[in-house]
Length: 381
Ligand code: HEM
Image 1 (tube, rainbow, N blue to C red):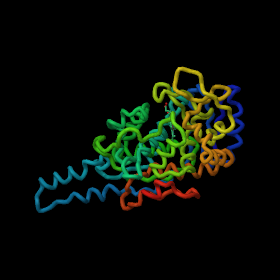
Image 2: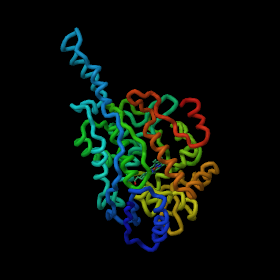
Image 3: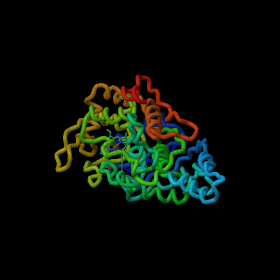
Image 4: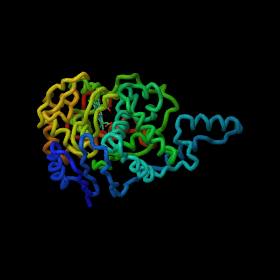
């Protein structure tokens, strides 16, 4: 049964209640609907009762271990080979080689609700962590992506774009300690998936198999994540480099239904919607229906609505001003189910970019959203 948690909200947010209530029939069973006011820090979450559908290849690490074999060169060589074999992956240090991903999911879900942090949940931060861990991928040379878990090392940990994400990584250390067999790369991506599902989003296909690098030497140069101050051409450059098309780009940026901007992280300020811990198409609706003007303040250029309680980044506004992007904004306002489906596919694909899963060298399958692949993808994908 759907759990609907109603909260007391100020008048300016009342209409959101109606919208979200109307949407309840579209939400899948077992999802939660949370109402959060802009400055409301009290947690309204309850755990959903999703039956975890984890059909994972839990034994993948064992294959790696079999590489370490005793040979005629004696014990010393074997020991050296073992070190070499295990050195690229913390996940392989687990003595049993098994990870209980259902328990990992539960442990992540248990971390989400936090009174006093933002809107009462680490969920949006975990989603951003998963996205920034993966969004460094380049289809040109197949570098970057979530494999390696490199954001825990410099230089990625120090990139301006990743400011604030150390909070998520620190919080997730608890899960890593409980489940040392999971790689950081798997943990960071799974955290985003669990957060989305727990915040009422669609089920996201996710599988383990990412391994950890031992330092940040394989990180790409800074500059692969999008610059919020820029427009449509830049957005296409960034996302087409990853292999995404216009429809997928618009679907992915719909994640801005979650969370908020922080003055001390990006320099921008405020939430996109009045229900920032609930998955919805509300980002597109307010983008399309509200009247946006440049905010007069000492910070970077950003937009505010007439009631001044919501914000848009210049990059968000590009989804409105670019006619190709805009048609998908209009589609997702009208068709919440299309957004849920498209988002789930594109986000799952994002998390797999550049990852070679054991026994699968396809880099995952490209989501087919009913239009031609981007130019980059056709050339390099
Ligand atoms: C043009 C593309 C994008 C730009 C320019 C952009 C920019 C930003 C900025 C500036 C912030 C505020 C960070 C802070 O101050 O804490 C933010 C937050 C966020 N972004 Fe994006 N983003 C983009 C795409 C995406 C995508 C593709 C996703 C996920 C699929 C995503 C998920 C989020 C989430 C969930 C937050 C809220 C984090 C929190 O509340 O702590 N963004 N984004």
